[in-house]
Image 1 (cartoon, rainbow, N blue to C red):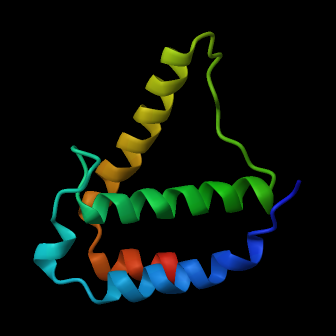
Image 2 (cartoon, helix red, strand yellow; image 1 turned 90 degrees about the vertical axis):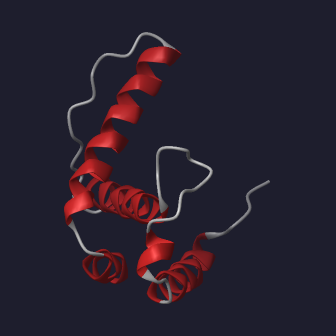
Amino acid sequence: MIIHVLHLFPRLNEKLLELLSGLTEDQWQKRTVCKLWNVKDIAAHLLDTSIRRLSAGRDGYYSHFPDVTSQQQLVQHLNSLNHDWVKAYERVSPGVLIKQISD
């Protein structure tokens, strides 16, 4: 059975942007259930996912992916990718982040 959900993503993104646009500076810094990440980090992570999906789907571009021989190596690699992106986005304002998510 196939469940078609692609049509829901534009509305989901619209709601995300609505939520993010209404946050105060303090709310951007609030901790989340992802203990090491605040709200801004989660938003940056969502942007990363969208950009990588666009790069692969539209442009056929895939960055280097190391040979992974265990679940632990896979988790370590994904955690490293996520950490690098979120760390870089510490230097970006919430306004720029919102604009990039909306584009």
